[in-house]
Image (tube, rainbow, N blue to C red; front, side):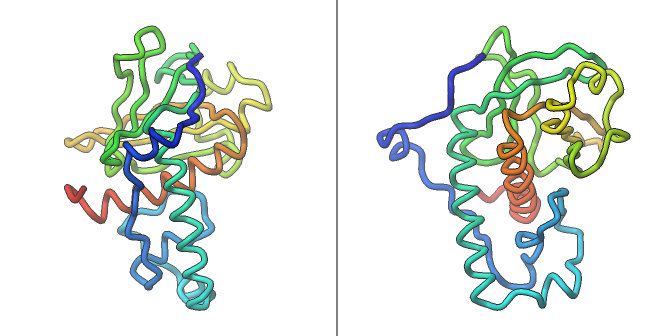
Length: 202
């Protein structure tokens, strides 16, 4: 198991704040959606989502999400503990996931060799993120479910992404807590929209 993700003030000063342009206009309403599933830039916001928040509420939500994403990104750059399942196996590895400083890649490190990456997932290529809590068991590989108890299943996530040829890949991970699971889902949704909306702009 890797050590925790705590950071010192000096480390914070060396790693710049991540200032995502989370606007409060209608074009970026997906940022404000309560749905925890990935919302891509192609999705059209509903009439309810564009009209239910006042300008003050939108601004407050923008500030909340900005802080949430900043904290998540700073921790993820250093590495966050998780349990990882290789696709097609029920073997679990205690390792870390990380996000690079440019917010372009979600990376799983090799549990035996921390300097080696096991999975490199372009954030802009993420198609969906499934959770047991939101999507149920039918979305997940049976061998992974069989290897987990009820408590671990509640923290289970599956990330689906595509390569440049459109081929789909997936991997499963278990977060440390239900709170970190929810934070991962919300922040990765925002980072995914940001990456798809701003390709190459870092």
